[in-house]
Image (cartoon, rainbow, N blue to C red; front, side, top):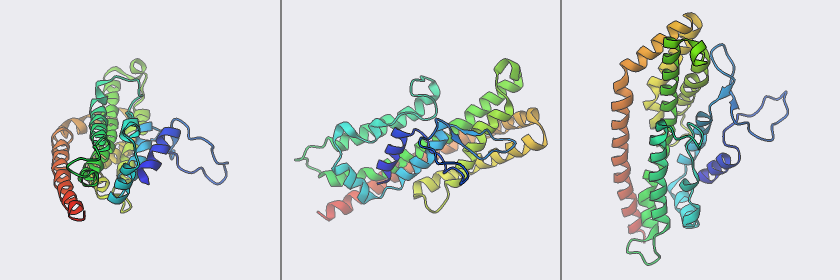
Length: 276
């Protein structure tokens, strides 16, 4: 089941690693940061959160039947969401930037616990509740992956802006490394989310992340053609002038997705109830 495989990968390895080239022996353990294709603008390391997006996408591809089967054999102390932790920064980090990610995990854990603790003599059968919750479960997974990508866009923009204003000697951060290590991998990952193999919720995230792909491609090209300082200035100006998309449009789309998940959940619950 996708969720079980995703949980195993994150719990054992922590990140996703592409297969090694044929000339090198297979690695027995995925490193904390995964190798990425090297070029003049990208760092050889992929951030942990971005590397975990394929695993979150795999979990979102779990069918309704598999989800209900898994929930039927899961005890309330061993829920999948209750074992997850923020991926953007370290688990021990208390940055305010982790609040949205922690909120998604807390809400999903509470919903999952509610489903797993239903009494056997409940008025509404457990399978009906599980059918109703499945769309919300997929939506929360999609929101999680979307926030990971947006987080790296904002973090890269903040680091680049600080470096442009104060200089790399004071900040200890180079513009090329910041763009190559955060923005470029996030844009490349966002590009893959529209693939047909993904679930509808993940592909919807891929569509909403198209501006991120454009920003990443533009920053990568400018880094090669115009230099670090110009790239940094244009990147900050681009993100600042499109603030309405990241802070208004995307939350509005997420809210519409929430109501769509509630509506679809009600339909699935009625279908399941009719089959009893």
